[in-house]
Length: 322
Ligand SMILES: NC(=O)c1ccc[n+]([C@@H]2O[C@H](COP(=O)([O-])OP(=O)(O)OC[C@H]3O[C@@H](n4cnc5c(N)ncnc54)[C@H](OP(=O)(O)O)[C@@H]3O)[C@@H](O)[C@H]2O)c1
Image (cartoon, rainbow, N blue to C red; front, side, top):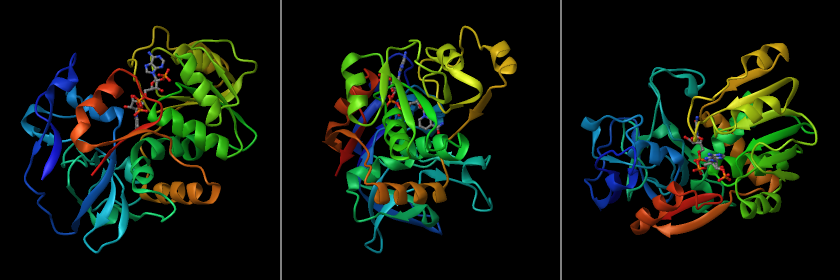
């Protein structure tokens, strides 16, 4: 089958290790099923994998991709939940110490076929296209959990989203707006700030700008470049929810004094459960909110898609189609 896979790692030139080529059809363990992939979306995770983060050289070649929507062996339209956990684990899958994401231990979704545990198959609502559904299992699910499960954001509160154009950032903006939250957004680029307004931001700012009011919660995926601003933007007792460190994990000043003195909460968040994915699907169906797709490209153009993500030339999700 045709697949997009990591052949080698490079911290400085991650795309040099990317290959589009033939791979054997997947082996299907008991309790697993195959999905014929119709659409699969890119995540920053795929670039981390090509840099060697979360993968070892002896696991190569590894088919990349966490997210997919497609057709299962029984002909059902499905969305694939990306967390593969220990079959013995009960409860919140994102807390399973043995969990992995597709493409970390098992081959990922950038292929004609992907094998997944049957419990990872979630019915795709007819109202969502395959491309829209393929945006959800990583970036959108992460945003949903950050806002509603971990951040406990309520209608009427004010939230700052750091970063405008990323997959998680656009999901945060859209979902927060749909939930009746006042949304502030920072973005490095004027055009992206304007587009953030178009998809639901109430006000947009340059990175580090003073806000008109302190916020109830900040949604962080950028890390070092924005951490100082995130902590300083919170009202006393506010919370910062962090799920990523795109610009690096070590802030110049962690702002520890401000964190204890203003009784701020720092809340980690990673991925989301299959139940949260069902909740996200229901929310999209009932509100009419939809994932913002930057571009759809055939899987054969994967190198262009990865280049766009690596250079930050993206607003929303990039989807590879079959
Ligand atoms: N923990 C989890 O489960 C989980 C799940 C999904 C993603 N993540 C992490 O979350 C991060 C975002 O993922 P993604 O897929 O949304 O990536 P992406 O589509 O590449 O988006 C990158 C985002 O980071 C912002 N950004 C990058 N460098 C910046 C800088 N120096 N200063 C300010 N903003 C900067 C961009 O904002 P602009 O609008 O300014 O360009 C954009 O919003 C990644 O680190 C990823 O690994 C974690």
